[in-house]
Amino acid sequence: MSQNPRVIPQVRSMAQSDYLKNQRLQKLAELRAQAIDPFYNRFGPTHSVAQVVAQFGSLSGDELEALGQTFALAGRLMLVREFGKATFCHFQDGSGRLQAYIQRQVVGDDDFARFKKLLDLGDIVGFEGTLFRTRTGELTLQVQRFTLLTKSLQPLPEKYHGLTDVELRYRQRYLDLMVNPAVREVFEKRTRIIQLVRQFLDARGFLEVETPMMQAIPGGATARPFVTNHQALDMTLYLRIAPELYLKRLVVGGMDRVYEINRNFRNEGLSIQHNPEFTMLECYQAYATYQDLMDLTEELICFVAEQLLGTLRLSYQGEAIDLTRPWRRLELRESLTELGGIPAEVVRHPEALVKLALEEGVVLRPGEGYGRALTKLFDLLVEAKLTEPTFILGYPLETSPLSRQSDTDPEVVDRFELFIGGRELANAFSELNDPVDQRQRFEKQVAARQAGDEELPHAVDEDFILALEHGMPPSAGEGIGIDRLVMLLTDSPSIRDVILFPLLRPEK
Image: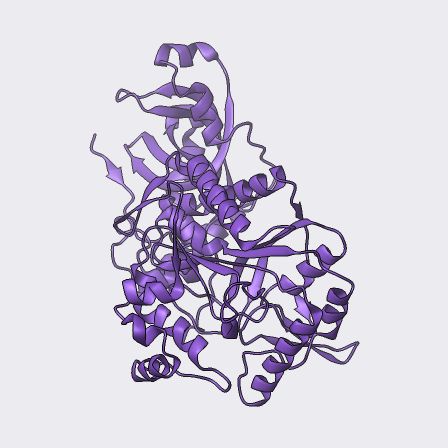
């Protein structure tokens, strides 16, 4: 007897989708007319698909028959092949996919007809039966009875092309996860990466904490914040752009090693590297320097990569990357000459470099000059060339208001940024703990804000200064972009591929 698979149209117009939905609504009504609850909630699976495969997937047909065990599994119908008096189907739960075999003589005429006529791809069904192997050796559930658990009113994405519309994948992530196994794997790896980061830091005596998401004065980074209002207190609040100033308060309080993995919010544009809501790891260690954090960062990322991938050699978007330690360390100004092609005499000459930056289209905001020109030219000419892990050192004081000034070069600070795969992954520095110096830097930021730079704080954070006046031990702190780390370790080209629900423009 010939195979008769249920086929989803390869191209589906709006009218076709409405037609298919209306068909399912008619089936829903018919189920209710037969006193069948299409949203049944009293079925308890005994196993997941993954458990069945792990425990019984290696058994032969004879061994499966000898088990004499009945299994209850539940999942979404993904494929149905009809053979007259019998039907094969594939269903999947959150752990995997399994084949089921339904025979009219086993389940009965009425249920068999109901399965063929009233159930659709996308429906969630509970199956009870025994395991066997087909002639081709595929592990299969011989269904003795089934229960419709959820009637799906919308058709699955087209069978042969899957969900390929990138915009639709982001807007309807549930469909993306449903039909694209590789997407589910990315987010499973994301969870595993965060678990490994916690495991690494916990083992080294760091304490995980939580700090405010809403702040009266946004600080800890240079970015435009989102603004909200607390009605009961009649005060303006800001979604945090960074947790830095609160984590430092904890170091003042005696928590020598702290970290937080949580959301930051920055009212900026969208790109393959930027989402206004993103996840950061920030950690602070007392009695440490930025050089200590370079070692810690190498150890952390290598630990995560080896545990997740089993290797320190990976490929990112076609580029081979070797995470084997030690990683390259390069001065910012040297990188502009070595990789950016700017003559050393121009790099070292403030007026000449500012002139070059302006010619390259760099926009200098009020109060900015040589330091800003250095970092923006680096962004333009060097960053994309840093495929192998590279620490960039020697950032200018002008662009690092919270960093400790270098003891050997007053124009730069004790800071690094880490680049892998042509993008920034981490930023760290020895912390400024001099309250007088910190107040002066804050006041310069406020003056620049009043001159028109909306990305800077609108006021001096007096409470943070007060905390510093009580004495913060010499410390170092670091932020690592979790989303970008996940991108690297899952070979994902866009930040939207590693955020379950990225921000999108409203549909027209």
